[in-house]
Image 1 (cartoon, rainbow, N blue to C red):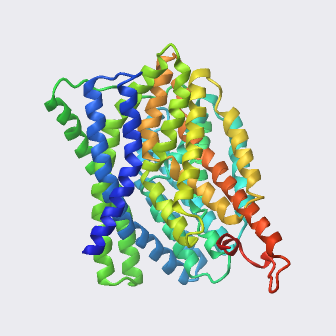
Image 2 (cartoon, one colour; image 1 turned 120 degrees about the vertical axis):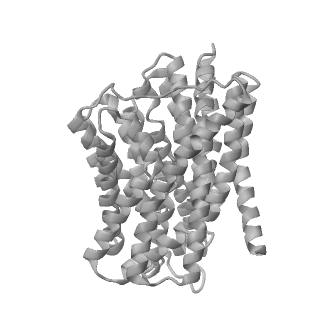
Image 3 (tube, helix red, strand yellow; image 1 turned 180 degrees about the horizontal axis):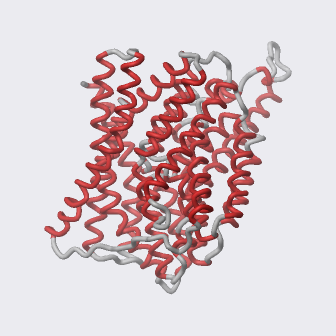
Length: 512
């Protein structure tokens, strides 16, 4: 019990460090240049409290359940040595988990011209197909950079045949579908597969699944855009609730709880059923481990209900109103540095970021620390939000930023250690989670509305930007590691007993 308390305390400290900077920034803005109604401020504060408790329970629950489930499925499936079975299970798992992703429902609501179920099933199929491709890459040791270059080349060719108004929504879909449900399971699934491999590149290949699974939704939505030809028919909700008293305030959250209780139950059920059937077939997990997984699932469920209620009911109105107020100032340019600062801190509050940074630190034996990962992600998201605010003010097309950004990221893949490429492209999907969708997107929508811009083309795309910039910053960190390795090699090359670093894998070089 003492261990559990220390773990809980550790998770609480991590959560408070992640949420307090955002809380402080919003409060400073509210009491200085961007006054907001007391009712919206109270919604935000209650939402922040729910977010803290929800993130705490989610992080504890994921470690107990989703991580263990993913690793066991990956290990047992690979031990079967039957390729067809592995690929079929991989597709089913990717399909089921994507349908479970709550942010996918948000995306579906934004594209009124495509039926919700058609969009959801298409995106889920896209993730399933690309999870199969990711599995084949791991099993046959296919180089990730070449695969990424090919996939994104296809993506950018498809953009030539899709209405321009639809491009931002399509690129947003890649970040939206890799959220708090998908990332922990898929990442631990990759680690489980790599665990039974004995070659020196196994640890490198354990990352990269999320990166490929992020491409599937973009392709699926672009293809749907060619079929349905969507344009300005997307529906964007920017309603700000009016609360006159504390009873109405409680009513907002009381009305939100049943929605997310039902939504998360529907989301978790397919994963529980899938794992249950898998356990019946394999009978590989002890009763004690199953009880621990069950308790972890309860923590995960309650945590996500609290988290989603907090950010959707409390954070969305605050983000929208702040964006409107700041963009309406005579010195509207200040929204760029403000967006940059918010972006730096808000990524720390993404639930899946905790999972990624922790697993990277564990898989690299601390060579790539969670702190270094967190800083690189923060810098990347800071840049992306700043650029998104420039788009809001100027109306510049997202393609002027996305194409050069991905070109730089893909070129870097040929010059950095393999593990940094895999981690970087995984990080893009992880960084663009619920906090981005429920605070940054409404913030951009509010600002765009105040400036009289086109919300579909100028505000949407912020999730795509958040998913893109970490690819560059984390690979830049990889370049720094490589330069340090080169200096180390020059220093020790003349020493007795020297072994050339070419004989080591990327993981061994990083550990040096």
